[in-house]
Image (cartoon, rainbow, N blue to C red; front, side, top):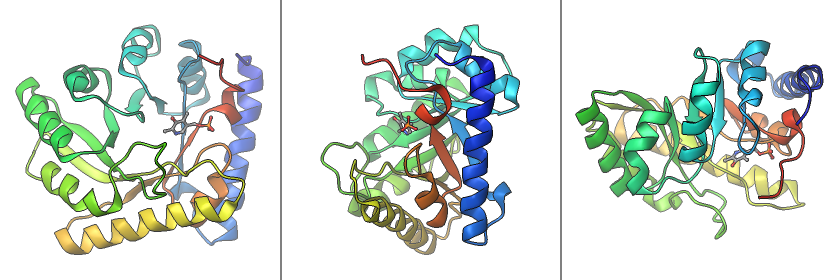
Amino acid sequence: MVTYDQFTGHCQAVLERMAQACQACGRSPSSVRLIPVTKTHPFEAAEYAHRFGLSAVAENRVQEALLKRPLAPAGLRWELIGHLQSNKAKQALQAFDVLQSVDSAELAARLGRIATELGLTREVYVQVNSGDDPAKFGCDLAQAPAVLEALLPHQSLKVIGLMAIAPLSDDPAVARRTFAELRRCRDDLETRFGVKLPELSMGMSGDLEIAVAEGSTCVRVGSALYGSRPVL
Ligand SMILES: *Cc1c(COP(=O)(O)O)cnc(C)c1O
């Protein structure tokens, strides 16, 4: 893993990329947040983020977050960005403050019921496979209304937006289309259900400028901050 000094340099560079991207499309830099993706890295990666003044980290696996969180500073928010199996719903609600990867009506209902039983409230995003990528999780665009509908009755869950991952591609148009589709989906859901979904979690190390141009409010960045991940 990188040293803390290297991490601060990388953070400044990523924040600068975000600021430039905001400027290029007339957005305020404060309208997009950076969430460091600490998956596969030791718990010190979360400690770096906290020391730098960032308020949250993202992980893609429940078990990994459960192991690392007790070792990391207490003030951090932990957000789930990886696929959640329904049999891990309870652990996920206990390990994470925010769940960005709710991708089916069944999972939504189960999370809502268990969160209520546990007396927890959690912010959630609907993950949509808006790039129509067979290799990615997330509900289809056509299923997004059903997932939102399953979330809305649960007081324990507050739906704040949508999340998407662009398909791997050398063509930037693929990411652009994926992010534009997610935004369109969000606009349709807001109109159809009369709710506000202000958050669009989209963009990673390689495509954050495109995501910002398409309206991202949260870029999830791993390798540009911590270096390449060990192959698992
Ligand atoms: C790993 C991961 C990221 C970070 O990817 P980088 O290319 O390392 O920035 C972002 N989002 C999700 C859902 C991930 O699993």
